[in-house]
Image (cartoon, rainbow, N blue to C red; front, side):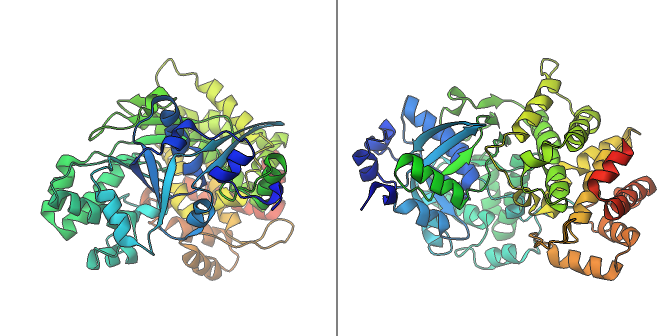
Length: 492
């Protein structure tokens, strides 16, 4: 077999003299279970854990759990669970091989193994990247939706769960029964107060199953809030082939990311945790200001870019931000409307952070696809754009840019870009949206009124606010009649 066709593994690395992490050869035990083994986890939490293992050792490898598909296991298993992390910045590239993952379990195939692994005495921490929809929360209230079909399944069949909450409850019931310690359960998803919401949802779920279990979880487990930040586009076949050409091995699990990385964690642990704070993460008493900053500056801007960009037939974020009018719009959305809503330490240089974000968006090596960011808007809009809009309204400030971003989402949901090309709408509420748009029969005012009445997304105060309805309707009409770029240029 030629080198160019060799799959990454410990043996391949040895034959190519590619350095492996020193800890990988010592095979430390796992102490972390991670739910939701996607590219972001491999480029973020697993990378921080890799650095801890490199510098300090310890039994902190990760058992990854795929809650849906077997893709991650198929990618990693034949590679001895090794993968390449490639950091791209313009024309420069840095690579390292990560060995922090010890095993991958596919939950639908082996639910009992997932439960046993979380319940194991060697497990101290559970981390989660399951996306907003994985928590089964009501968008309107932020609380667990007990009517969710998968939650109903997990309450009726607690030993064959489908959701992260179901697996956690089943495993914690075993830990309670076996007199084991509680766990640090760490949400790493883009949800404001993610730890608090995870705790409330899990306690509500456990209360339905067994009130004594809910009491035990409340007393013994900790749910720190966290803020995570690193742009990790979905890996493409082009990325995989380029890596193969450069490194002489094939890596189907490789991840491609930017130099910037941030992890802010509330110092609220049930027991031992890795020394993430010694390798770049920050432990703080209150994550909320950092969470809000990330959601309202980076994530809100990303959503605006994604919906406007997809409608304008831009493929990637850097293509969008290269247009001076569009870059100015995003810069003003951040500085004029999002930044005033934040309460950060006086020492924090917010203007520099905003400029850094614009530079990150312009990183042409990332090729971060607008359509990837555009997914699941119904779950993202409430956390990203609506807090900005509500603050501006409550303080009687201008909000036209935020309204324009929401209007861009409504234009995006029409499923066709400005060149006439159709694209699918990937959203758990897509069927509901189709009903709204069909009933509105192309009338922008009817679309806005009906969409803002969806209380799973929009609080009633926005639906009842004449200024908001008029502003979003005007922008949607302008985007449809003039196109997004012309409409923004006309405003300036």
